[in-house]
Amino acid sequence: MEHRSSLPVKHGWGHVVAAGSFLDHLVRTQDPVSALTQLMRATVKAVQQSRQYQCHCGWTDLKLGALEIDRLRGADLKNLLRQGKLILVLDLDHTLLNSTRLVDLSSEEQYLLEQADAMKEDPNRSLFKLESMHMLTKLRPFVHTFLREASMLFEMYIYTMAERSYALEIAKLLDPEKVYFHSKVISQSDCTQRHQKGLDVILGAESTVLILDDTEMVWQKHKENLIVMERYHYFSSSCRQFRYAEKSLSEMRQDERESDGALATILGILKRVHEMFFNQVGGSDISSGDVRQMLKNIRKEIFADCKIVFSRIFPSNARPENQLIWKMCEQLGAVCSAEIDTTVTHVVSVDAGTEKAKWALQNEKFLVHPRWVEGAFYLWRRFPEEDFPVDKSRTA
Ligand SMILES: [Mg+2]
Image (spheres, rainbow, N blue to C red):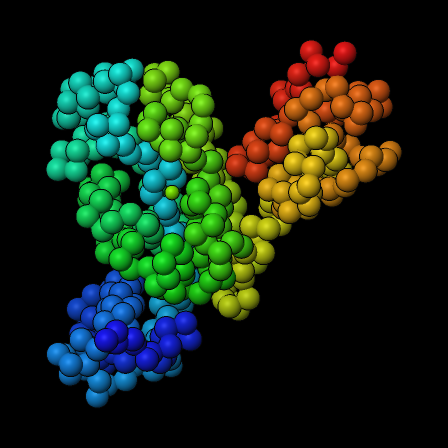
């Protein structure tokens, strides 16, 4: 017979049976961040395995109430803000790095094996062979500078859906001196909901947390905290997995640029949010700042004053306002419309021969490829429209 936990996980930590002495021990022996993180993990496990805990551990006589958790969270939040820091949650794969199994390397990528061996002693290398896992890992350009500078402004967590052993291996590559993450590495087994990441296992108020992740759908409850990252596809297996028809960076023997790649760009956004938060809060009322609103405002500046019409971009039976690119434009501050009128500033199309595209050309409106929108969404700036032309060979 299946035994189910009677503990209502979704209603929060306060209902969870846990050990007060365990908590006290953690708080006494560790910094509050790792104490609460470990407590969260232990409590999640306690919920999942409540029967075993009740039978074998004898912890049911001590209840950890919601007030106790809140007290810890509140105390730590104050400490954090006093240090001038916010919280940054970092995904690993495709956000900070790209990994591949050795068996998935294409013939054009075989040179990487030699390269990884030759670089073994180089402290600044970015390509690593994970011998025990039969994998190669390529760190995203700029990642070390990113972590160093972000760590001055944020308390940082790794949060990955990957297995714990892999997460810890990667944490060693990113943070060999253990100065950034300490024990703040959250992996698949720590997630409280299947296929979802949540801030319930993160210490800190949601108003102070920023998240970097290439996968939006795992953050259903926290989209407002999320900066969606352009996926870093270094290896060919990654391109195949995401059905990218183009050759991988490794096959072309290229890489993202350090100076204005994804991580350098996003670091600039993080610094801006951080500055806005502490300037606004100004040390008076710590609880009044909210990074979600700041992120929203910064994003909305990018396409402010743009009115955008789409031409043959969506399937004919789809509701335009539900399409990803429509939503991206709105988040970027544009007004989207189904019809052309004189106030329209941009027509987005892949075909210069459509009626709306022709109208744009005749009326001196911008006619741009959809990649203009994607570029702005991922790199947080409005690129020159002329860099995203629409193929005019189809105009005739
Ligand atoms: Mg990812």
